[in-house]
Image (cartoon, rainbow, N blue to C red):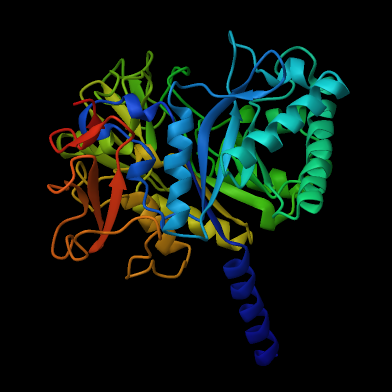
Length: 453
């Protein structure tokens, strides 16, 4: 019996090691944040995540994928150049969003010919820009007045796209493009939006959005990404937690090895209306917007770090997540302790890994939290049991590092290259990375960014 249990334990470890993914989202609007919060692909550690999803592209009136930002094409190149450092890194392009408040998927999926046009466009676009796959961010099918039709058409889209990706790989003798989707965490939305047993086997992985269960749209404080239910929860809210969401996906037939648990690098904020400041305290809207993300209702983790020294920090034992309060401001967030608890649930359920929203809201430079670069995601990586990142620096054959040991003894961060103002160094764990600014720009150490001369 002991040998049998040992063998089972070994198989469990091998399963987790072979199926684990750490998928990290980045957003193309983070480039507009001020000062040290500005984020572009040049800020990405190429060895941190197994997959990076570039967010966001959209669908035009011709049912074709199209860019959103003026410099998306340049940022695509910058992101995919990271594979010169880490050939194992996979990149995906996320498509979705809204046009005038309506998902662009709604009209595209209606007819077979419009779906076919979109799929052809996707394959061509991904290949042209050196992406490894596509991420579908339709949030959510069934929310626009035709739930059953949307649900069935989403299945058709995934079925047809899977077949087309397979044919493309076979016909062109290329690696098959990956296909993933961001999917709901709330049970009612899951039931309304997806034919789980039909779509889950076809997707390479599913990013369950196990967050935003609560927020400033409610009238009482609640954590946006709790691990378990609270004793204050009642009615449908008893399912507004990660454990319930994951269990529902698995019960509906999603293969555990394709399910990725969502981790946040942001907190949801509230404005308190009374002296009560615990879980379930009365509120009226959000706290003030953060100085860098500048959006009411949430703060990035690096903004939370600025808040914590003056705040009262608390832990919700039954939900295994933290929150902090100061004056009338309340924020529920994630930290290393809550990450560790969530990894335990991930492991118990033999899930395929984790996805993180987002790279750009962790303390990616180490500037704010005094805990190194990417403190949350690095902790997540370690907690999931990934092998240590390389201690030597693989270099692209097209880039010659003029000062091989520049970063020896220097803190992690970005540094000017005095020999060439159109390039700069990124130091990470003693390794030296040489990056180049986009054509026409030069590097300024004051803003840690490339800008016009």
